Image 1 (cartoon, rainbow, N blue to C red):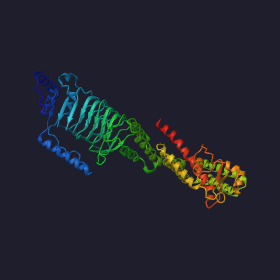
Image 2 (tube, rainbow, N blue to C red; image 1 turned 45 degrees about the vertical axis):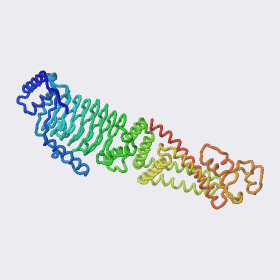
Image 3 (tube, rainbow, N blue to C red; image 1 turned 30 degrees about the horizontal axis):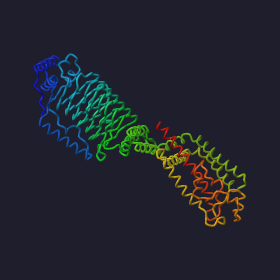
Image 4 (cartoon, one colour; image 1 turned 90 degrees about the horizontal axis):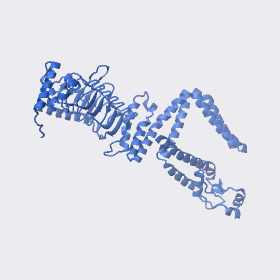
Length: 563
């Protein structure tokens, strides 16, 4: 065991002089405060621990762990041992802020072990000349570090209860808004009963909250660190329990270490709006599924703020896109694409609901545009009806009548118009999801193309007895006449030989010609001839354009989002 060297006469002289200065400042001083002052001058630990406190502390830690694992409510502070040594918070303030006694203090700072503070430790707007260590101490009225500047704050293993802060209507355990510190320790059994505020704080090195317990009492926020700037590392590993939310809105973090066992209750709610971090710890692995569960907790918190969360909430894409960017920088491109794809899928239902609400708020404009679209479709059908096909005229009437109904009736029923728009947006989003994975699984389009080419190969396959009951026939009139008569001809022989697989690809893939569609077409003969010619062929061509368009759009959409 390490033994400190004996104190020199000069150190003992400085300690005596510091005690003399304290008596001049405060008058009568308790034995606890005298030991704190003496140890601050000598650079030793003011240890008030006893064997009884030691045994009680470890039993309390075990009971806390059992309560956490069984999902029971944690007691406030009655299970933690309350030290008998009562320290005066004014002594801490005087030691760390008085310029005249700085030469009498040891550079190690004020180090206290197992003491109790019954009143508020008020260090607002103070510049602390030395580090402050309060290890396994009990602060029954909180600690105020508003606007303070220091090199180190160590509260490892301590219990901090909420207290009233001057200038604030709300109580909190630690108020450290605007704190400027090199390093802050809230770890190894640290427990706060009340909000820990670190809004707008600047941490030059690390903020360590490993194995801490944070319990909220008022607005369900356990750690409010919005706008915090941690230049080093933020440690959130193996947090024992968080009774509330960790708010990291607008936080700037150099390195995030937050691994928690997913099988325990240490998973906590977290807010990540505009939170940016330079890297994420990759142990045991940087897994997309674990990180998506992490982001889901952020979405659940924001969704709870809405009156109708299932229909009104649209997830904020920033936490997803920032996570994907960091994953990509750390060499996990596939995981990054998974995160972006899931982000698009989670936003899908919210976008459709938003479109429905927009239409319901202004149904007249929407119905007018919808009627115009129907009229254009009807006009195209009417123009095609000039050829004299009775069926096309009937189709024109069936298109024009719904257009009039949309224009005249739907404005009176905005909920129906909104539902139509919701169906349209939902269909579009799902088509984009399954076709190209919202732009992040674009090679699915090649699979769909291959599937439709094979389906077309079956539909366009020639019968064994052309041209009597064959499904295909030449396009050119003279060749068709000779083909229909069953006569061999030089003109027919000069055509490219028909191939069902190549013809399927030629009609499906836009802007590509294999010289099959130019010379062959379905004849309409046979049992399924009419269906293949009039129904399947237009569908086949249309799906080719749809898939190709979605494939091209996936590149532009992906580049726009990543940019």
